[in-house]
Length: 334
Image: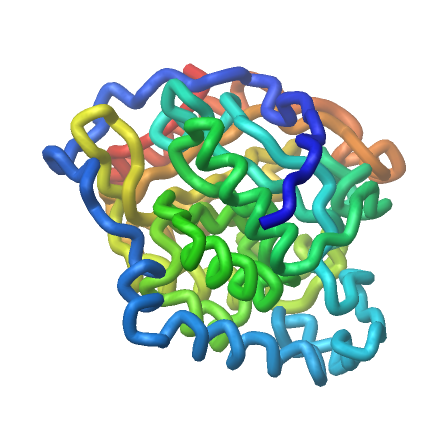
């Protein structure tokens, strides 16, 4: 297995390490729970899943954009990613939710490019400009094993949607060489149900964004069609696969769904409809991080409604809505 230089990165979540929610629910000693991909490895199913996912690169329908390009021949679609995944940085990350970061950090791999084109992207240097290096499957597997060696609690795949076939190839190799950490699928939430079906019993923890409750707003600010419809279907599938978040006796997530919702100015995120969907269609026990760190990054200054930070009352309103709907596993900055 090749060795690689660690690319250092800074904390992209400025609210710092979060406290564990007061209403965190524990599921006993689950520290010996085996990641699902290891069970699939034994019977050859993991290899079959990786091969099936790779076929989707030929006429690309890896994500709902359905660009149709042949990425195996180097053709580029909207995500501007060909056959190889592009990695911007990786390392131990302490700025995620407490059940993910723990005390040794989350083994985070930031993939460059994205299938969303948010005008306010907080991380546009990675997602839009492609500051990165291409990595083949063996190199990506080496990164995963390196993060495990460093003591990280999990492998946290950030913006994985458009490179899921490449990730599965790497997980197969890493598992064959001793990877045993849970996989965290840290996504913008614009995911294909067909690709998610290939991830069943491979991904242990799903961590999707729910960005918008209104299709027109999503189209205007993230340049994608049917975001709420596709996002909600994806979240329901994730919940079906892994259920509510399960914590071990140390408060670390070992399996389950963790949803993130970024509050936007002027209620542009459509928070109420998202919260109602979670409460009525998913579970009132869903782990929900209501995030307040919005700032007018990237091209947001060109959109008057987005050209300011959120006010405290805007954030408080969303928290009160969540509580009134019975959502009881809230991760907030208040």
